[in-house]
Length: 336
Image (cartoon, rainbow, N blue to C red):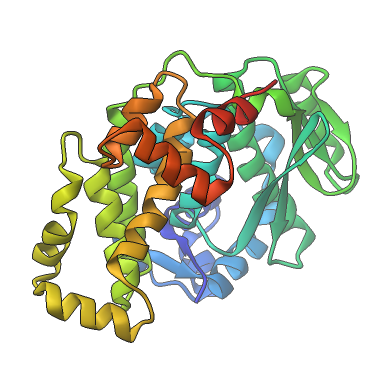
């Protein structure tokens, strides 16, 4: 079932109240109990979320109640996510983190990153069929992404909106964005694709695994898995994120965390059609690609973090997985 963070409903209720309207009537119309909004990590199902927005959107004077696009709201409501997105080796990695962990905000819409030649495009797609709801949700999400783009590359990018956007809001957005607003099909954020792989000088490597672990834990609470395969993958990933962790003890650490013997864990994995060593290789492949995006890491250091005894063994592993060496991958990924 698709759900949305109750923090969005709280913002809608506060906005409704500032307009002199009764917030209780708003919640009643959407079928939401006030007690649900008091839960620290509460969620609202998609159908009631859309009913709430359908009431709010036609009355929202976005041009007067919005501030210029910034990351302030993201930090206020989703601090670990905002912190991770502002501590990436590149913009590409930051966007990957945002899209991967965005279900913590909501799951009833979709953002997609596409590259075509020299242009990169982030497009927003909503599950709603209400034009005002689509407009309000699109702008909220794209303004977060626009602010994230400005964090890494100030003055870059264009916000593309369709013609149904209200004239008053268009004028306000145009004043905020200068010449970086244009008409087009759908809701998009466009920018030069070359910006995706420029190294970010302020990247803090040791901090990133701590933030990833926090968000991974939150995702597990949102989507608890009954499959041992998914739980093992998550535990392997967390162990590799631990600085100074010994990859040779990964299996023992996973067994301890699951309170299982090696024999019992392997039996459960066989029943799910997999094996521990295959899952370890899967996570190593994913982590290798992530770490290679950090230009501050030497190739030997990347291999060491993944538990390879030598650079040659890491290179051999990577070539078998991707038909290219780690240095070739890094060079092609970061080519401008």
